[in-house]
Image (cartoon, rainbow over all chains, first blue to last red; front, top):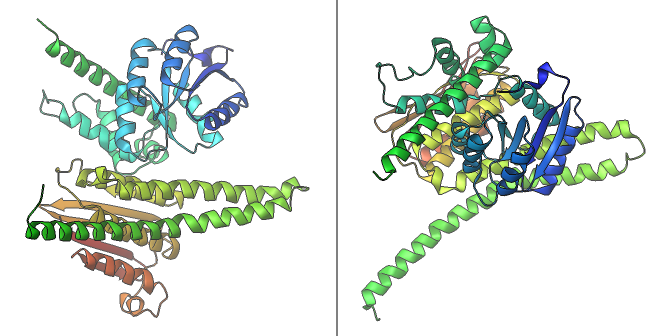
Length: 221
Length: 226
């Protein structure tokens, strides 16, 4: 993260990219009603948001997975390239872990399942800005699978992760929630959320380097 | 182009069989939609009527609104479950495992209980027909509901294991337990849920087992061959 709005008196700026106008209005009203937050962009599709956000950068973008035009995952990928400083939080009605996971891999740092509660949304905004992330057991399992798939250089298939990150991931996959993990590892709730954020970061790096390898392989010589 | 008579007959029969299977599936989905969605939607409509009478007293509106919000959220979950059940792209052991883990986790936590999962990190690419995964889902749902509503458990554990092609699922609680003899003969109430689970498992050629001990807890196990 380049700017940390918590260090300043500036509000946390949020943009919403959601094609359903009712949902968009509701989310915007949630953000406007929160102290310290400002809703500075409302977009109905990916193309408009990409153009608008380039002119008006924000701290956080709330993105619907199912956008018309460019699909949600591709949208995150493009935004990760164009707007690396903005935190991307996915909004999804899907219980579909695959889509959520693909978005996380492409650069999102969190996700919320619709219908979203106001308190949940505002908590997520605070968490993401401070460098934390939500992760549930089903996503943790996907992360484990994803790290297992990469060629192991040292024999340990989760070698990209630190021992603490691995411990957190294992407990998450077994159904422990942040609070239970914090108690078990003797750290704060906040620290656990930060571990999750770092695990997502490593996923992004990995998927970026994979994309680069694919590009090199396909490039004409 | 004319087909010979036998060929035509064979095609007609195959078509009729296929249509019958599709119809059966539609009947099942219609029933699920009615059970899951119809009832809750009716409750929402009724509550909106009640709400109209309280417009003069905002404080008396709050419990109705809380209930409306809860009902709408539960509807949203039910729609997810139905969509998951009918979408053929979910017909694999991996998708099943992933969905079940998430479903158990959400359901148990929504009831403010502790949830523990033991799922394989990876599942082989084995196909799982819609009917099989849906029946297994209903068995697990029933087992969870029984544990949540009747056992007074603190923790619910969910196990899923695949040995060769044998798929094993278990829901275990640390609740009050009971004497299985009494419950299965229907005398202890909750017998309906138990016999439903048993019937569903049998319909898929599966084995269903109940182990319970008063004061220790209950474990429901189901095993099918994929």
